[in-house]
Length: 316
Ligand code: BDR
Ligand code: CA
Figure 1 (cartoon, rainbow, N blue to C red):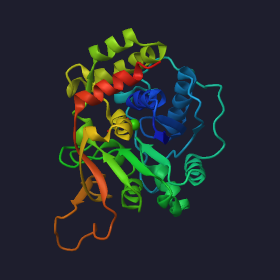
Figure 2 (figure 1 turned 90 degrees about the vertical axis):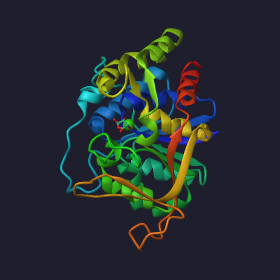
Figure 3 (figure 1 turned 90 degrees about the horizontal axis):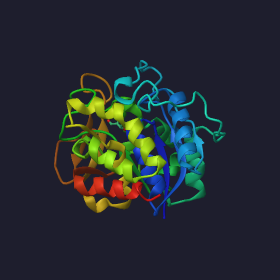
Figure 4 (figure 1 turned 45 degrees about the vertical axis):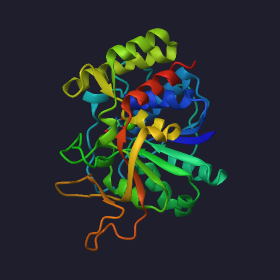
């Protein structure tokens, strides 16, 4: 069983990944930690509680960071055009959900859960990396106690999606992402190189919803606005970014990877750009020397990934 903490900013594609994690028989979701990003942390936390209630997920929800780790960064606007004003495609979601939150902040929940399960926890982070960076700052030893960290974020050999060179999750808190990718733990980076070519069409989702239960029908409904947004880039479908990270947990063989030190540019025209110094390539001394070698996805068997998502979501 893979013991997973899901760090997320639901978020439409976050919701699909959550249902995948919840329904996969080899995954035990130990907790859901929330972060700002696709909406404010108040909204993403409310959404996590809403999905927990609708999908009968037992895992606790712990509320996380509301701003970047470097307080000096200016507040950004929420991407309502992508995920809707309410983060879930503008479907009807109650203002508050009558379920308790874990009393701890997300980063403390992460530290406690990792310490209670040394060597076993897999962190799956699909929003800003702020909670993970805060956990590392407060308790650096957890780096040696986590099994691995799988993140959705970044782009290496393809353009960004919020600037010519940066992807949203990394661009939203570059300092936090740089802390995470340079820490002495195993990080797997699932970025736009693979997620932007892994798309699910509206009709594929619709067929799935027709066969599926209320949970899949809810997912279909909340995805419509996001699919409309993606019409500029995808032919009547959506990129399933966050689910790609979830799939990596159980089917890493569907990905091609390279290894190397990973840094994040903090500031300037390339703010939030992810950079890899591939292992074995020789360069003059630079800011990548002596850093842990991380795993970066450069290829993906998209069709198999999409089918695995479908098969898993349809397991009621
Ligand atoms: C990432 O940004 C958000 O819009 C998605 O939820 C995903 O985590 C893609 O760049
Ligand atoms: Ca996300």
